Length: 137
Image 1 (cartoon, rainbow, N blue to C red):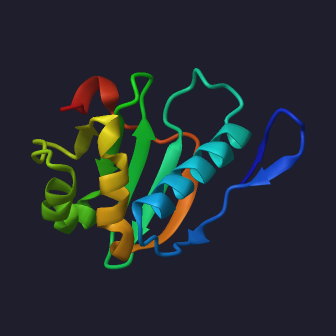
Image 2: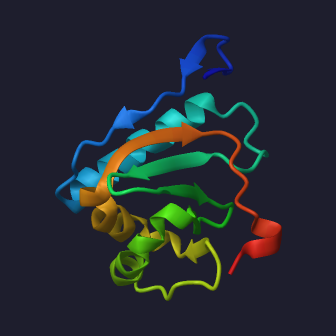
């Protein structure tokens, strides 16, 4: 999929293979790079639903978005339900009743470190429905 950004040059939103991150420094560098990539492709920052999708090697996807307050919002697909115990262990946050998780922003590094060995691919997303009005727990 192609998307136009401010400089009118098209930006490719393709899947990228995951490169394992071993340390908190690696994760923080990845977060910084991800933020730069996202800023490059998001034309209207007032829109919601942009973020990243982690495709897990054993099935399922986790969509990640950060809200205006810096919280992390996750949408864990049904196929990725198997990762719930790891999400709880990595972040210290109890599983919600539905698919939408909200985490304090300071848990992002632990989240990515915990998911690191399970991620196969990532892709930026520009219009994911996080159902924040209905399903946010």
